[in-house]
Image (cartoon, rainbow, N blue to C red; front, side, top):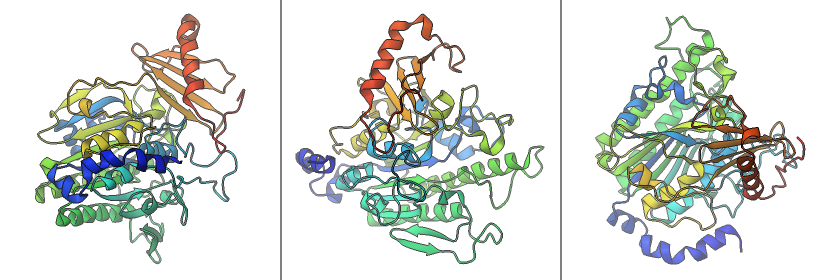
Length: 457
């Protein structure tokens, strides 16, 4: 029996009780609408609410003012595709299907993209079975055309955007996907620039909410927008034209502020349609910041004092902003130091919907912490692995953070309570902690034929 069959069998009774009448039952429960907005490669210190001083993000900052901001939330991985796989499946990178942007071994040519399996159970499937209308707009990265991994085969009723993450670099593309059909933009290119993909995706996001509101059903919108991932080709650099910054910094800032504008448009639509009080809105980034766009010496300091960036498992590569807003249910202006990660999203959203998540997942519901209540259930540890450029593993156990570059290399150990920047390797002083974290690293993963561990590398 595969995971999807197990989920269907084991969860049948609970799902019947929670959502036996589908949409009608969900409406009787007043199940909240869920909007999950995820930026691409955004550094948490680009946001004003996280201490950023240069880029204007008033609408995202308002989400934090009216909701809760988490200071210790972690992405599923340090790059796009595996982080999204973790988010969708509730399985960390030791277990989830997609553990890298491209397969390390045996991936299909030319790019080696591995799709989600037919038996993977996604958060969209869980919510759909609970009576939700489900939609995704933006970047998918978990299935090429005609594979089992495309969004419409993984629980989404509506899909618009890029299937392939490399394609998503091109904001002036000549086509996007709507469900299983290509939507052409003839003649669109970096030179002609007549249809900016983010603007299209913002409109499609708004359209999905309008249609769902008209239908009177609870909805789940996964707005996986591509900004501010490169290429840095915005339509203009307003409102930063006169700033004494590099060209790249102006473009990057303009893209972030453009995204912020559309967060504001979504919030205005919720208010206009009377959905504000029954919609929970999340905002996060898919992984840590990258110096590839604005340079490691940029005044923006997107990663703050955190060590590392996108592509490694130091805090700068995996610690991300996370905000949740739900008027009347979440205390406004709250800040939480609850430690959690993307694999907790599936059970958390299932909890919100009154649905049952799959049994064999790594995540736990963080709804109590989001609502400002006592979070009794906690992780024993958090685990990440990343195969590109060698084999990296990381574990957070309490305030201890262990990182290993290769299964035979010595483990680095950091005390995050006193060394958030991970400057001081204290492995030699705490052999007992090292031993325990090494045991977690062994125990946390199942073998992957596409991303095997490589001894000594």
